[in-house]
Image (tube, rainbow, N blue to C red; front, side):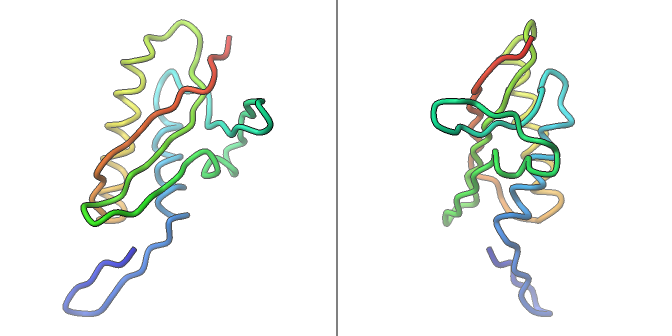
Length: 112
């Protein structure tokens, strides 16, 4: 992903966007952590590996971010997902300057 200005070009890797999105999501109440599917098992990722639970796709209109997450038991899933989407959108756009077209939240599991 490239951002141009009169001074030159800044290239931002997808990994930076993924890490920013993961850290923003992890700050939300009701989220246990990021998840990764491995042979029909859902694995809770540690904080330093949390970007592996995020997939970033670049489009002409902006980036599409897919988050694979594990939520806490007892929270309202829709409300927490909306909070995650707002937090991720705000932090990615503020930090990188890249327009976020869409954010998809995939709830892989619920932890008690």
